[in-house]
Length: 223
Ligand SMILES: NC(=O)c1ccc[n+]([C@@H]2O[C@H](COP(=O)([O-])OP(=O)(O)OC[C@H]3O[C@@H](n4cnc5c(N)ncnc54)[C@H](OP(=O)(O)O)[C@@H]3O)[C@@H](O)[C@H]2O)c1
Image: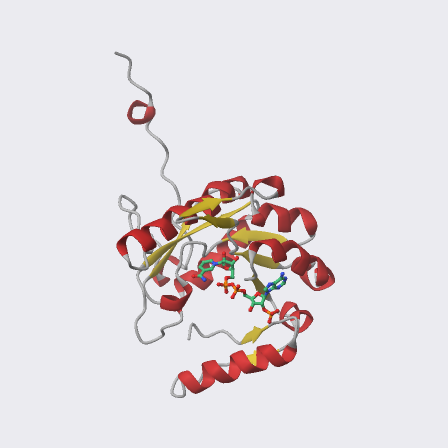
């Protein structure tokens, strides 16, 4: 829908084919360019999104490491568990799934993004959801590539949330959103106030640049 040619990967190409068929049947008028492949085929593209459960993300990246070399890889996995009625964040090695993937395949450039976007609502192409998308990476060009993708999705705004170390709280915060979903019987998304909207197509899809901080505003007051 955003104008990309998409290859859906799977550990079994046949499962990917079923997914593609389902999507094309659901949206016959959209002229979607979606193809099926195994994970090697999906990784043999320009921009890769790893969207497996958190405990399969590093292994999946490793299994296609040769294809990821030199490319931008978006990690969206959240390490969570449910204990009784409560969602709890888990802390993977290196603090986040995204940092684990970056460490596993150092020759790719990981951007963490999309953690807070509810998949079912995102997939309802007839009703675009309104959401900010926090992006963090140690590679500015990976942040820019993820931001360009986000900008092409209606009603979504990319925000540059800093380096990859920030993936830890971003991934963990998803537990709060899931808790809200249960409590309020809904599907929440995140929207931040206080940031001027400079992220539309006119701004070239770049995430909002932070303004220089005024020390007088941020310094803690005594008293
Ligand atoms: N669902 C949401 O609303 C949402 C929103 C934001 C972020 N996320 C994150 O996005 C990721 C995917 O979410 P999802 O709901 O799509 O998950 P999912 O349906 O459980 O898994 C997605 C696919 O990953 C593959 N997979 C499953 N276990 C695997 C393993 N151990 N190793 C490698 N591949 C495996 C499976 O494909 P094959 O069996 O065909 O290989 C499966 O269809 C999660 O980490 C989640 O935290 C989800």
